[in-house]
Image (tube, rainbow, N blue to C red):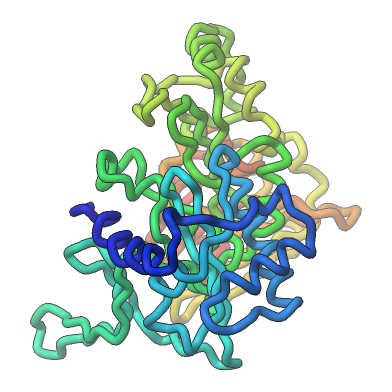
Length: 411
């Protein structure tokens, strides 16, 4: 990081020395304080302006769920002097609360003072020394390389996120993926609480993150421990999760020869990683021990459920020009033919196309079955089947699938 912390802490250390202080001190850890102490702590650690009680509650709630994803790191509130150093470029536009851990991890949350936040239209980039800049990306109309017009410079800040409405911002001072000995290593990319911030505020996944934590799962890669990576599709969206495991649990998984039927779980959606994030050998099927560790994350469905269908509806997430957003089919002959093709399908390779479109099968009793399929664009098809449940992909065969799409869903 080019002696990042040396450059950051020299001016801070001088400031503290002038005040007769010998070291950086922080307020008490959130989980060990009561509401009165938390409120007092926030008032002392904001850069210039005090947070209202409502803002304190909003930020504390966000802090609580974010930090639950890395429980081994114990954060405390950041001192006001340190907070001012990192937030100086936008101190007039936002109120801040910083969080700091003794082992060097640190981040800052900001909430806009204005109803129309000042940063929403700005782009971010990382300069050569690794620090964040905000400004305008200028599109070169002559075909040359685009340029960047810097507006704000954030010394010491290594990552930046903001909510879509710009009300909240996240400044990552140092997270696990930023440490010098691993920075740039793909194994550790994304190990930043800013990713959890982004999932919650920009993907509307607050409840999903809460459910992960209730199941002892995480939204970020665990570090310095083996873990299981899980991946699934629900309602046309991708979801990821990680489960830390012990070395003994890892050995038990790798030595189990009991195979789980592929109609229950797709082995493409479950991967094992060792202590330092290294890939474990790919398994051609999920064994029973591994399945017991991950089954609560996945939904298992059966093709036998596809019966007594009275109507079918295709919902496109991103309809192209000339395409209908929704296609309804209720003619009995058409419905029966589509159902016959679907029920003839077999477990298939999923791959990594987007299963963002939904095929809704309505049963005679009014209940619905949701299938997730890849988009079909006027003769172009990215996949050849559907996901039923959250991980298992089925296909009737490429030709049969394309014929079905062209006959009924080419509008």
